[in-house]
Length: 326
Image 1 (cartoon, one colour):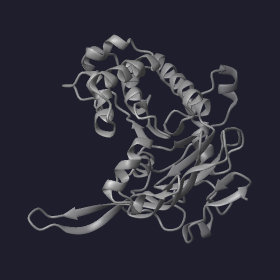
Image 2 (image 1 turned 180 degrees about the horizontal axis):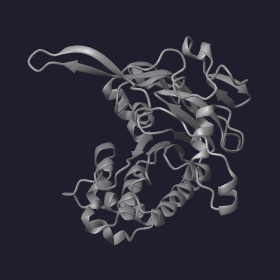
Image 3 (image 1 turned 90 degrees about the horizontal axis):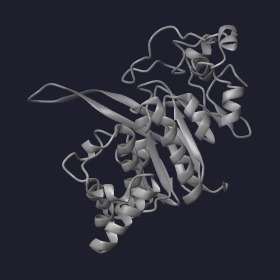
């Protein structure tokens, strides 16, 4: 893995407006789904994004690809600022950025055969002939572990794991540099999850892909990711190499998340201490003043309720947003 930065995210915000009224709508607030997030994605790495539901993981993934336009901030992809590009300029870069969606049942058109689904990006972005597109589709099906002759079947004829493989094939069609994996295994059976993750790992080794891997399952994140970013209420709490984060987490929220991961050894499982967070996740339309985690943090002090901690480098490669942790 190189040290070259492929994507640089600088203070990115994504706010969704809240309107009131039917005939005459008035703006009454904003949902701060992503609120000032900054990080880099290194070429060839897998960066994991973790956090509980509603923290903004999926939103930042979609903003990275400009499926949602950013409210503020910059997204620099290989030297190009995506937030300032016009649609026709952005279209040329679409071939280099793809996404694997969470739900393999909803992300495939049920009225299209999978051959056409996989061939669609080729039809839009390339000048390949019909026979060349068919050859590429069958090659992609073989790459993801499906029978090339399955191109004439509909999505309903496949299992969930097979459908997700079709989604992976579609994402690979244009030889992208970056793939955003939006919880690609959460809708699959446990027996199939490892197969899809191992497929993604093998494809990365084979084609030099860069992943942003959004997930709830921390054990899978530990298996596939090189670095892990922890999100809470639209902000980054901690970002560190995988081994550091799982062995020595610094932020109290990271410690609470990791303490929820079950240990397969029953003896160790009985001995370990869980960190149980009290209270509910605050609303992103009305986040607390100061540190966003202050209402649930076991080590919060007065300063945490008045000032928001900066996202700083605690030691080389390990970033944290907390007043009480050095």
